[in-house]
Length: 358
Image 1: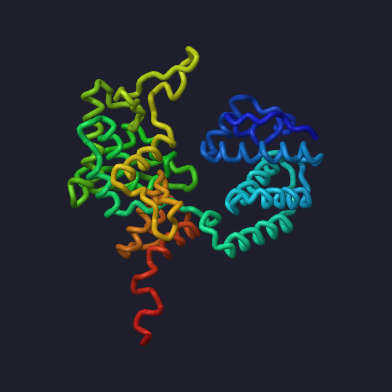
Image 2: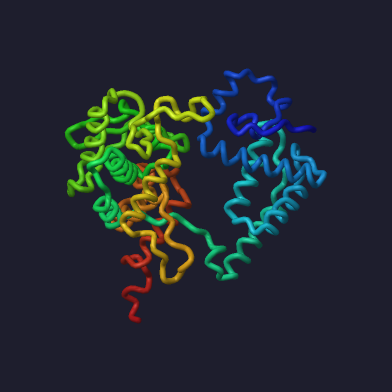
C-alpha cells in the first residue's frame, strides 16, 4: 500500500494516505484538523514522515505496519540515541495514523520493551546530557527577578510582562496563550474572567485571575497596561491579545518573503514568540548561568516554565491537586502534574523522614 507525500500543514494528509480517507472533502479535512492542536499536528507529521522514510529505505510497509516493524524501528531510534520521549511520541504518531486510516493498530509489545530498556540504560549512564531536560520552573521569586529586569517603557517590554504574568496565572500552554483574543478577557471587580480554549480538556466557563497582592507582579494590571499600550499605538480593542513586535518596535507589522506576505495577517504572536519572551526575560535576569552540577547545561527557560512554575508554586502553597489541575488544564490524574507536585514537595511536611527520630 503506497503512502502519499507528507503535508505538514494538513493533519489528515500528514498521517493518512489520501487513498485511505474515503474521499474526504477539503471542508471535512479542515474540520478534523481543527480538532487537533497545531503543535501536536506538527509533531505527529514529522514523526510519521521519518517513519515512512525509514520504511522506504528498509523495504518495510508503513501502513499497515506490523509489530516487528515497530520493534525494528524502535531499535533504529535507540541506535541513534533518541530520547525516550521522542521514541514514545513516534509510537503514538504511528498509532494515530492507523486509527485515522481505520486500520487495526500494530502490536507494540516488542517496541515498548526496546523503549523501556533504552530508558533504563540512559538512566544508568549517569550522563547528564542523556537525562530528561525539563523546563525550569518560573515560580513567583523567579518571576519577580524577570519583572525587575524588564523595561516596561517599551511596547515589547509591556507585552512580555503581560505574557509572563498572565501565562503563569493561567498555567497556560504556549498555544493557549497565543490564541487569546481581546473578547476572551472581561474585567470584573475581582480581576479578570478569561475564556481559555483548551483542546486537551473539556472546560466550561471562564477562569478567574484575581488581582495580585504585589502591583509589580499583578497579571491584571500587566494586561491592562499592555492593552492600553496597544490602544496608544492605534490598535483597536479587537482581535488577538498578544501580537508580534519586530526589532524596530513595530507592532504587528506586515512581514514579507520573496514579495509574498507571511505570518498571521492579524499579527498574532506564534507559540515560539511566547517561548522567546520567557527566554529573553530569563537572560535579562541573569538566570541562564550554568549550574554547579551541570556546568555545560544551563537551566532551560521556555514557555513551559510558566506552566511548571504555577504547578510548583501551587503545591508549595498547599493547593489541592485536583483544583490546581483543573485551573491549569491538566486532565484529572495527570502524571505530569503529579510529577511536578512530587518534586515541589520534596522538602515539605509530607517527606516521611521528618519526625521519625533520625
